[in-house]
Image 1 (tube, rainbow, N blue to C red):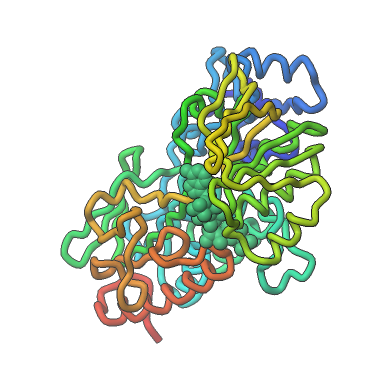
Image 2 (cartoon, helix red, strand yellow; image 1 turned 90 degrees about the vertical axis):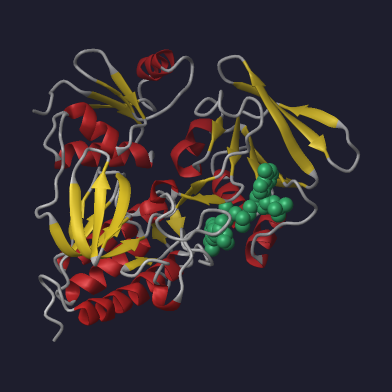
Amino acid sequence: MPQANIVVYGAPWCPDCKRAKQFLGEQRVPYDWIDIDRDETARAYVQQLNDGKQIIPTIVFEDGSLLVEPSNAELAAKLGIQPKARRDFYDLIVVGGGPAGLSTALYAAREGIETLVVERSAIGGQAGVTERIDNYLGFPQGVEGARLADDMRAHAERFGAEMLPAQTVAAVRADGSYRTVATESGDEYGAMALLLAVGTRYRRLNVPGEEDFIGAGVHFCATCDGPFYKGQNMVVIGGGNSALEEGLFLTRFADRVTLLVRGDALRASRALQEKAANHPKMEIRFNASVQEFHGDGRLSAVVVKDSKSGSAEEMRPAAVFVFIGLDPTTDFLGDLVELDEWGFIRTFDNMQTSVEGIFAAGDARAGSTKQVASAVGEGAAAALMIRQYLEKTGDRRGYRGD
Ligand code: NDP
């Protein structure tokens, strides 16, 4: 049974805190909330618990044990809760609850296709932790990522799509015309068709010190950690859309944001390049390659080499944010479906992967454009292809095809 006396330390702007609180609320688990932005003692306590690192949410349980920035699946396991789907067989299982998966779920459920969405963390995916999305059609003022995620979920649920949160898919199998999804907690669900909409995670630099200072000066989410560094200097690494967009967002808090670009050109869109070039708080340095991170418990210095002159210098920002591209989260697929050399899922005709009845959409699909709008579009296209596939196989439960 759920435990009581749980304390969640976090801050109101932190998306992972919101997700953890929402999960506890949904599971009816009582907890106390402490905002470390308003409570210096609590902030110091969180740092003490995390060896000097300030990582939120930090969740302390009745027995004194803690979970730091847990996924919903880890939280569920700790609480002894095992969310289960209502049935064990569906027409369609969608793996991944970001915009692509939710779009497929909405289209499919609306046509009477019995659909389950399995998501290990928060419904909404990466878009859900993006502070503001400015280029999604229909929102002329931009839209908060968290709000868009909530609305997308509600929309898919309105047509009967079932959400299974906090469950990590460990493996996927194809047995004849049946497809099976096995979760890390040991449950199995079957379906006639699968959609893989598993998304990506931010790539690491893999230089000395990076791992040691994650959460203690090295970060991968500006919305999650930027507000910790109000009035200080920050470094952003990367020259693509993510680096510039997140760097511009960080200027709200930072005194100065220095963008370190390893080559001599940016990859971001023209509009973002212009915004960054004209921003009084932003500085862009080219040919700047990060060699290592130093510190004692928390980041104190970044060694940056000028790849033209070969000279190295030490920078001392309060925090570094790394945005150097995306890796697909496809390890769990093994060699079931064909992947490209970077691990993205190859699709052939009609968004189908190399295995019949298994489709892919969104950021983890090879060739995808990593835009919310295209993820939603790919999700809708995949749903129509899945409908055709189900009509062809004829053997489905809820879908009548008329
Ligand atoms: P990108 O692949 O577009 O850019 C990666 C950047 O990181 C490049 O500047 C690259 O440099 C640099 N880089 C890669 N590896 C390293 C390394 N080891 N050390 C230093 N620098 C490195 O990735 P993004 O995360 O920016 O974007 C991913 C996708 O998401 C893109 O398709 C992008 O368009 C999309 N996106 C769209 C947004 C929007 O439309 N508003 C917002 C955010 C992302 P180099 O050029 O030298 O390889």
